[in-house]
Image (cartoon, helix red, strand yellow):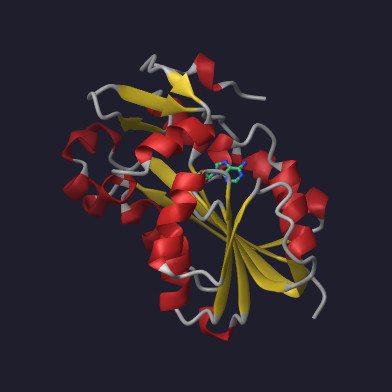
Length: 234
Ligand SMILES: C[S@@+](CC[C@H](N)C(=O)[O-])C[C@H]1O[C@@H](n2cnc3c(N)ncnc32)[C@H](O)[C@@H]1O
C-alpha cells in the first residue's frame, strides 16, 4: 500500500472529506477543471450514454457529473455524497432525481436497479477501494457499466500534491488523500466481479497548460484516468 505522506511535498494541513468539501463548496465549481474528468468521459468509446435509463452517481458533489450525464441523454440519475453542502448545490442544480447523504460504500440505493454506476474524482478520498467496487456491483443490473474517473496515482506521487483548495483566508487546505495504484483498481474491480471494458489516461497537454500554465514541467505526465467496467450478464 502506497502512503500519500511519503510523497507529500506541500505539507498543507489536512482535513476530512466532510470538513474539506463543506468549505470548498463555495469555490469548487470555479476551481475544478473539466479537462480532469469531463474531457476523459467525452473520449470514452464504450458507454452508449443515450441508452442509459437509470444511473447512480457516487460522490456526486455539486452535480457536475450528473449534469454531464443528463446532457449526454441519460434519462435519470440518482446521486450520493457525504457532504451536505455539496448536496445542497446539487439539489439546486436539479440534474438528479434523488439525492442521498451517504457513503459511496453503503449508499442505501436499490440493489440491481442501475444500468450505469458512475464515480468521478472520489477514489483518492477512500482508504480502501474494495467497498466502492463492491457497492457499485450491488447497485448494477446485469450488463451494467461502472465508469470511474480517478486522480492518477503517478501525478499525486510526481507532484507531491494532495487534493486541496484555498480557504477563505487564503490558506491551502488538503482533503484526506490516498494514493491508489492502477493495480489496486484492477484488483478491486476483478475481485468484485467486474470485467474491464475500456481505460483511458489523460496527460498534461495543451488543454491543461491553457488553464494551468505553471504545469509546463509536468507536460506529458498522466494526471487522471477513466475506467469502464462491465458487469457480465446480458
Ligand atoms: C472532487 S468532488 C467530485 C464531485 C463530482 N463527482 C465532480 O466530479 O465534480 C469529490 C466528492 O466526493 C465526495 N466524497 C468523498 N468521499 C466520499 C465517500 N466516502 N462517500 C460519499 N461521498 C464522498 C465529497 O463529499 C465530494 O463531494
